Image (cartoon, rainbow, N blue to C red; front, side):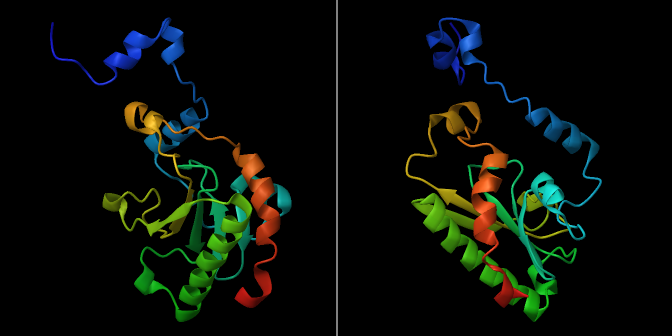
Amino acid sequence: MGPRKRGDRLRQSAARPEEIRLWAPWRYAYVRRAIAGPKVCIFCFARLNEAERLERLVLYENRYAAVMLNRYPYINGHIMIAPRRHLASPELLSANERAVIDELIAASVKLMRAELKPDGFNLGANLGRAAGAGFADHMHWHIVPRWDGDGNFISVLASTRVLSQSLEDSFKQLRPLFKTVGADLS
């Protein structure tokens, strides 16, 4: 008998093959776009009506920055904050853009802490494709709420993320909170 492979125990414990299948049909659109390469920057957009806002998952925007849900989140509530200008690195931002983005990061953590009640947060940015940026030419920050125990076995063994809420439901929960951010950031 040869060496054991990763996942053998999971496969052996399943009574039927269909018990080990995890269906994620929404990933197909992502894979197709990834193969074709991004055609339009997701962070570059004009004024949005509410239907477009929901379609793009934009929770808030002003003339300096935008806050949006990540369409392919690590976990529920995973948001991104990006400058409105198409820039690749923080040193290219104006002082006003940096100040507004900093305030949006703080406001986002405060709002999500109150609404989602996470045990912690991951905050960060991936600058450049080599660092993992999906849109390397338009920098953005990630804010990922975390709960004790959310990094369970499924991510480690099956490279699969389990999300307990649809993006539309996450948007409907968070959008009203971000309507309160406004006036002092424009």
